[in-house]
Image 1 (cartoon, rainbow, N blue to C red):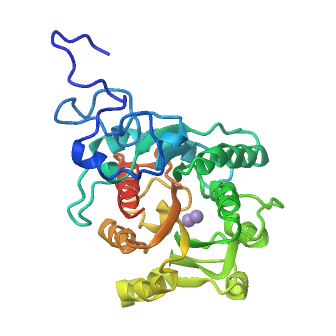
Image 2 (cartoon, rainbow, N blue to C red):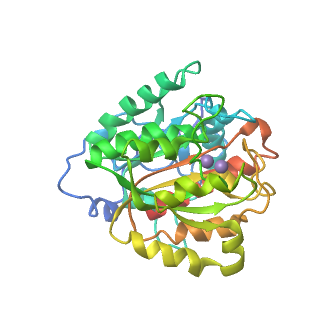
Image 3 (cartoon, rainbow, N blue to C red):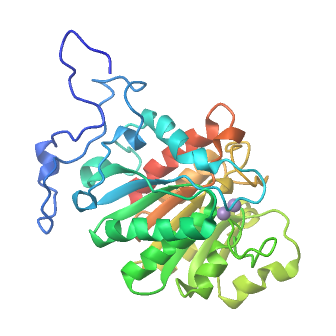
Length: 341
Ligand code: MN
Ligand code: MN
């Protein structure tokens, strides 16, 4: 930290005092000891300064102080093609420095509405997917037990399985899922392994973490191995809006399915490859024909009003990114998710 002649207006990445009008919105049920966490004000401390945290929020590791914990999960041992999402959380932190607090479309400042902070990264084992899954589930358990919701930043899509294990345990049974993805991730195995970024939601169904008819997948496209690739989804009544259907019928087709999730607890998972590689090139298994930036923004904003119990943003691979396009998009989509949580 450079020494200034005049005192810095606010130390970066430290809890700051909360405005009075925001204080009044606090739920009385939980007692907090720390001041309401706020992003560092870019009008007082320039965006490119300080230690990067998600949205320039304070780094707080006490879940009892939070409504929403943003958590990095830097694991890419489940990738099958291009690696790299282990660097996702760090790069999304850097790009999130440009996020401003007020959302003029949804009319919300999520950082005033909720106590949100950068919880830090979970400890992963880069050499073992099974051990990493244990670490993720065990790492999330105390956060969920403290009453905070989690917004995880991957990492490849395999991390959603241990996240759902923790979420389902917290909620006492299977949950509903909305998945934005170019791929169903319902495959059975790859090179004999049951765990990869192509299999998390099949395992989740098998483990009783998801309910039949309670999963909506939006953005599926591209080639598969054969027509029978869709059998598992049909058997479990998975709702699907393919990219082709979205491009033909638009938002009403998605809205129609979202009606089925009203007032039900639903987990949201956002694979950045749901977006077209022209907008999000830095990802592991790119598929052409995806959403534009504005389309994925509209899709996330359409979730407003749902009972969202947690979310993740996965598959950002900085080594394959161009001009930080993908991590910048992911940082903005993470912000939009905070606005609908
Ligand atoms: Mn995926
Ligand atoms: Mn995908």
